[in-house]
Length: 185
Image (tube, rainbow, N blue to C red; front, side, top):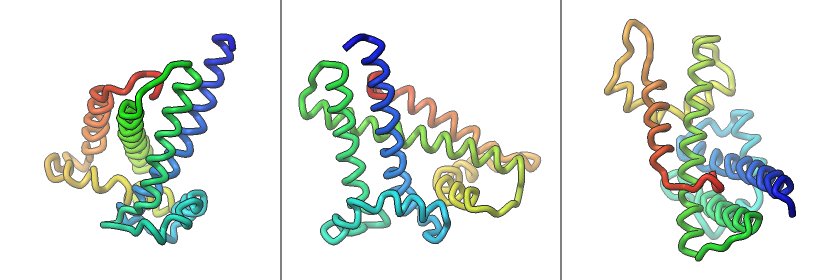
């Protein structure tokens, strides 16, 4: 396979797996943050991740608002992603390295997801402050566990909430500190 074909295949695999991982990650995080289950966005994520969660739920209960069935699916999907990427790139890793890179991939995805959602929430607050819509409700539920402690440390100044900026900055510093190779990002 030529270099261009391998790059195209790697891009396609990474994109499809990232989308699947983000959806399952959102399922875990929305349930953990107790987001509104009846929100249309929550319902779409719930329906998109229904299988294999419905099959695993009788065996893996929810513990402290963490859906273990969705978390296990997410972890297995991350491991499969690492194996597919190393297969496309043509090298091999030991099982311990695969598990380590899968865990790092999930941390990187979580950091990127929070960075993106906090950024979108900040933009929505500028465009329509006080507007109540399904997206802003989900974003508020998802991001408030990160923003609330920062707001206690850094209160609003002259009506301007700088906590999203500080949290995004800290998330990006954390993202740069994670030792995940570029091929798996």
